[in-house]
Length: 520
Image (cartoon, rainbow, N blue to C red):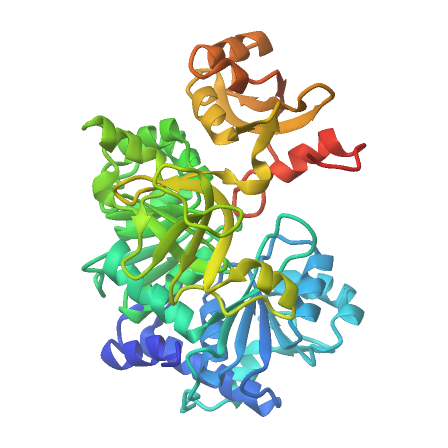
């Protein structure tokens, strides 16, 4: 089935239901579907055909979903681009994806024209506002398109969404997500994350739609929920709480850093957030102490998602019922896990030779399901390295307990080897974050003449609180084995993060390894 049917069917079932709200702008599902039809028709009139790619570079506007579903209706691959990237990075993705058209919001008109010579394959530049010269007017195209567009027939493994990963080294890679992948993701959402989800739900889109939040919109639209798109170009906790109270938000997706911003903001106690039934978080690990505080302050609404661009939304999940402050030792330990495999997802732990490891042994997390990408766009070498013998090799290190709960220890590249011992930074970070003066922490391995690598903690302190290097090292020594304690602690104003709030250990490491040929 073409993903476009999620919208087409909803528009028939609930034509007058409000589907999207952005400030004062509202669209019913009938209106949203008609506008997506008109855009698909207009793109077809420009000569764009099934199987070609279309890039989308927009802030969080309703037109994002119009553009996305127009791509699906045409049978084209959508290439949503993170709006926080540099124009040179925009150009790389547009060029590499071979996008035949780019649909952009006005904020990017100037920067796209500046890199125009690098995106020659993009034959059409369509802007939401500020058209002129080479920039075609979005609304004018819609007027010229037909409202009666017929959704294309597609094969299950046809490209639907070309998701460019943030990457850990080198240039981003385009994960090819098919109609099969994203329909499986949508069905799993209904089965596991939000059973009973339906048209009475109200969703808040507070994270970039080019990433997980946009994917999260597919099941919402498929069930006729109302989608609120936050009027902010950055995450504003007070606006989030105000919007939750105003619209009685039931579901939203955020990164762990956003949850931390929410629970530390005074707006938490000002606005009523009791309508929240499912606050889904993922994209990075969440430290247990932070999670416990979130449960205490936000109530029983949290659900953790673990996945990646290559297996979207998600591989495992930690359900509502496992987010408990009290309980047995086993229950408390599960707060540090990434939960259990999704209903139709397989997860195993492999060693370096792709042999399955016993429960409790640490190795690479691998998965297989209909969620797993088709491969990397124009990158067969990376595809063969990641998809081996039918399994997606995630690059994450962890173990599974006897009850199928997955515990992620680190990215394999983040593991520290000191004096022949394998050391997992998260274990140390979980200790340090408990210190009352520590607000954020990242632990990395740095060069050491004797041990190969030494453990360094990079710490952001809580405002108006102090701690010394010796104090934090001693604090670790009191809680974990001596060989795991940091040898040094650096204090910084902020930690480097990517556009989705994940701490960039590679950037931290580069500060200490830049004069070395080897990085381990």
